[in-house]
Each structure stands twice: as C-alpha cells, then as structure tokens.
Image 1 (cartoon, rainbow, N blue to C red):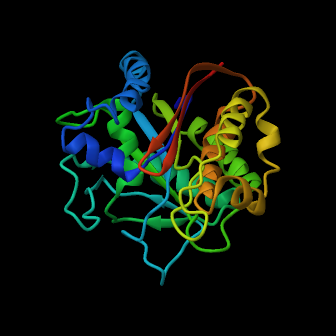
Image 2 (image 1 turned 135 degrees about the vertical axis):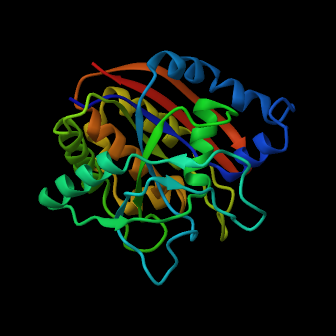
Amino acid sequence: MARITAGVGTSHVPAIGAAIDLGKTQEAYWAPLFAGYERSRAWEQDAKPDVVILVFNDHATSLMLEVVPTFAIGCADSYMPADEGWGARPVPVVEGHAELAAHIAQSLIIDEFDMTILNEMAVDHGMTVPLSLLFGEVARWPVRVVPIMVNVTQFPPPSGDRCWRLGEAIARAVASFPEDLNVQIWGTGGMSHQLQGPRAGLINRAFDTDFLEKLASDPQALRRITHYDYLREAGSEGIELIMWLIMRGALGPDIVERHRFYHVPASNTAVGHIVLEAA
C-alpha cells in the first residue's frame, strides 16, 4: 500500500531559484542559506521517495484572478516550468503521477473537499524552488509530483484548521491507494514576510521560530491561528504558512524531527525549513 513516510516544510522564495540558476549559491550572501539544506538533501538521497505531494500556491501563473479555487489538485502527466516574466527556470520538467493524483482527487471529493481538478498547468517558483532546494541541480527530478494548490493570494483563504483537515484526508487517500509507494508531503511558502505597504520587509523571528517549534512539539496549537494573527504577526504573505499545516495534518500525531533550519534574510523574506518523519 502507498504510505506517507515524511513531511517537509520549506519556504519557496523566488530569489532562491535565481541564485541557483545564476550560480550564486556560494556567494557570501547566499552560502549560509544553501548550507542549511545540505543535511536535508543527504536525507532525501537516503529516503528515496517515489512521489512528493507538493503543496504550494500559484503566483498568478496558471490561475489568474478570474478563477481562484480554494484548493486545486494537478492530475496531469507532467508540468512545465513557467515563465514568470524573466524566462522559465532552466530546471527539468516536473513529472506527475496522474494515477495517484486522480485517486486522491476522488477520495478528497468523496471526503467532502471540493477540489478543482487541473489537467494542465505551468508551475512557478512555488514548486520548482522547493524541488531545487531538496534535490539540487539535476537533469531529471528523482520523484514524481502530485501538486496541491491553495489560495493564499485572494481573500478569503481557507483557515489553518481546514488545511489541517485536508492533510488528514490526503493521508487517508494515500493509504487507500493499492500501489506500493513511498510518499512524502511538502508544505511550502512563508515564513513571515510582507511585500508591500508600510510594513514591507517585515520579518518576525519570534513568530517564525515558535511556529517551527510547535510543528514538532505542539502542532494542535497551530490550528487555532487565525487569518488576523498571521497578518498581524507574520505580515500579509505570512498566511502561506497554512500550507505547512496540510503537511503536518497528513503525518499524524507521532513524528520524529530530523532537521530544522531558519535563516534571514533571503531577499526580504525569512526562510524556514523542517523535516519530519512519520513515526
């Protein structure tokens, strides 16, 4: 049977992708950030997942303001890297797992989550930056990917508690898939940051590090964080952290923490990262 063996939380800052693509990873500004992922890249080589369920948000790449689903799932065989205004990143095409994605979509809809099904889409830095951080520069991604997209750009976004329950439903869906697959689930985005307005550049280290700690030690408390809490404490883009709760909800109560990393700044954003194995 398929099983979710681990969860990863990571930021997906677009400037990280640019630093990789322009060969700047060893420059003084960027080197500490990339060093923080070395342990996780080695862990991934040992973990050898078959599939990653990658939870991210579209940045007006495939879903414009005319169509804004709360939750969407990609069910295609492959996903092309998007041109976000300066050309597509020179990274491999993302290979999907259409059979598992279709099974998850059916299971979630029966479980009363109204998923939008996407049979074609280009994927932006929300997906490709996490893949680069965890797998490095490769000719072909070593996993197939089931994309889950969450609306965190247009009001109203889903609550953290709703995202947690979606994670639980994803775990049930994966467990009922008959093929023997090693599946990881990644929650991406965040941490604290604000890109506009009087508080542009906001970074709240205390909030971020507490969030990382609670993912491991008191995850239920994170379900109670409101939209207004995220806005006040983590900035207007801090709401992206609800996507990490989909990952955490899918893992169940018993986990083993393998790695944690926090770094500021990357561009004008805090970068957080955590690796959790299902016990």
